[in-house]
Image (tube, rainbow, N blue to C red; front, side):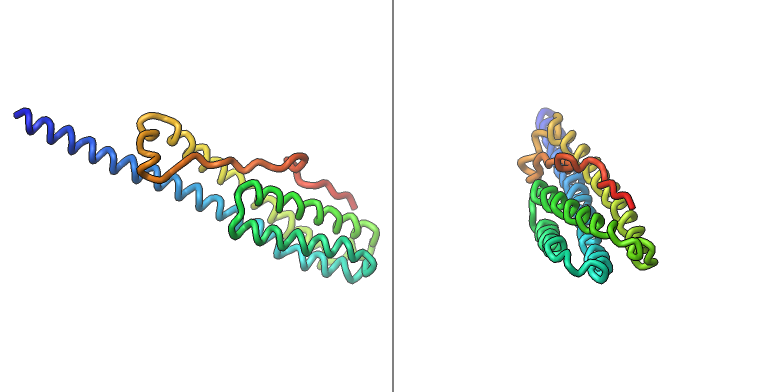
Length: 185
């Protein structure tokens, strides 16, 4: 009888361990997937910017330094999206934000450009991408909150090492970047 009770308790513990392992892995995968969503939106944004830059270039040939910085910032975002840490992604995003503001500032000096349907369509697409990027960041942070809550509470805390799951960092906007840049035309 004692042996049966011991076997039932051991079986229950093993079953709970499997459930805990699977739950932690699922939540970790969800956080990883959410970070991928942020990367997709950052990449989409970086892909839209050359079209915007080319539209502005036609009007402002002499602004070469601005366009070079955009190219460098886009390359940084692409690299950070592939293999960067959260801090590297945030820094690359901040650099691209600054470069984008510079491009839009150049565009302000050209009234014909601001009236161009192509420029307005690109502006709308960029605004839509900014909204999706904001949503993706929030979705990632929600997934990280769920994961971190599990990782730091009992009984899940005891299974983090076995599952290979650890606390993740939140996606924080860089200093001064907690709102989209305001550009007035």
